[in-house]
Amino acid sequence: MGWLTIGYFVSYIPYAMLVKALASGVTPLSTQPVNGFELLPAAVLGQLAAMTVFLGLTGRWRHMRRSRIGHARIPVPGRETLVAGFFASLIIGSTTMNYTFSGVSILFMLLLMRGGVLVLSPLVDMTRKRRVTTSSWVALCLSLIAVSVALGDVHSYHLTLAAVLSVLTYLVGYLGRFEIMIRVAKNGVVATDRRFFVEEHVAAPVCLALLLGAGALAGQPQLRAGITTFLGTPAALAAAGIGVAYEVLFVFASLIYLDRREYTWGVPAWAFASLMSGLVASFSLAWLAGLQAPGTSQLIALAFGVGAAGALSFQSAAVWWRTRGTGAACRVLFVCGGNTSRSPMAEVIAWAQAAEAGVAHLFRFSSAGVATTQPASPMTPAARSALAELGLQRVPGRGNPRRHRSRPVTPELCRVSFVIYCMTRAHRDRVIAMAPEAEGRALCLDPRCDIPNPEGQPPDVYRRCARHIQRSVHVRLCELLGPEGAAAPLSDEGDYG
Image 1 (cartoon, rainbow, N blue to C red):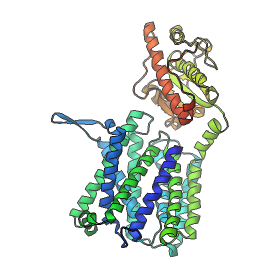
Image 2 (cartoon, one colour; image 1 turned 90 degrees about the vertical axis):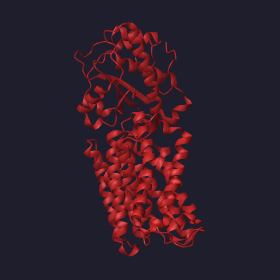
Image 3 (tube, helix red, strand yellow; image 1 turned 180 degrees about the vertical axis):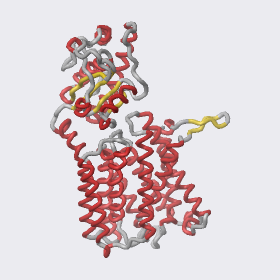
Image 4 (cartoon, rainbow, N blue to C red; image 1 turned 30 degrees about the horizontal axis):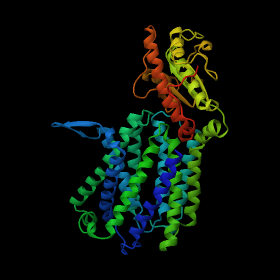
């Protein structure tokens, strides 16, 4: 999340400066102000080109689903991602438009836009039954204060009806996009998130191009000029650059939103980065091009906006401080049915891999079952034998197969766990039904498929299950460690005996 936030901050500055400079007529390519509708077609062409290059170079286009047309299988977005792309196109178009209105600064429009999204994020989480903390409601109040302060200084801006409608369009776009994203992606399943990211990424600029074309056909004069005469001017190059810059920040922003945790976890980082980039862009244009700097009230409103982002991020910062900043253990819970085979094997394997990587002090692994009928039962002999074949008879740390005793999952266990890895989707559903606030932290250990129960099966089934769990734990620990774990690579085939 840290690198995504930095990338978003850096990429937003040139985007905002270029839009405002072109709309104000202070670029070397055009000394006349360019209407927002006029520059949008060239900007969309720039984004389409950059999007094609990005997906082609990274190979991400392969994550799109396919539809058979004749004898060919063509990459196409699904129905829900197509709708999400439509809402994203409203965001792209209205964001660019918002910086082209005269009489308002970049920072002022950012406060209206980001303040609105900071208000929306806990509301969307609440409607989807995700946990909304007290700090979220504090942030909502601070966001409303920030917008009120910015609007209160009526002498520092000229807010037209068109600008108000553009901001409302922007917020409608985010409301629709967030609702679809939280329903079909944002669940920790890597394949699902990647497909959503790529399909929405493709659909958004295409939808915007179609909307602009429809507007031009309907007789909007600036759009017609933007599609015809403006494309032949030097300023069109700058407008295309706007689209390229937006493509870059669109990548970073989408990855921030797709984080499996609730919006009130990721949106603050995004809002803070954009508010800071807006501040830099505003004063840079005031210094370089003589444009009016933000007024005092807008800077006061900015302080409330930053306070709102800080309030929203309080809980995640507290978790980071407890688990990383102070060296306290990050609690990881493995869940299966009876807690006598799969989840205790995962617990032992996790302790072993973390110990080998030298990071066991960062974690506290445990296991439990959603259908434990006989608490305090030992691990099954077949499961212990499967671990022994992996060289896990004697495991450093607390993962001792012979000392394991089964226990049921409880709401308290879910509450104190940083992440909960379930063996099957049915187990995950049981956990969420018991502790709804854990929805964003309850994941399938293998996001691609369930890990089947080996109980009552031959020893080779237990061995295959143990190896499946070993590979999945390896992947999940790498995700938890992040880039800082690269110095001590985890082994998925090592001997821990």
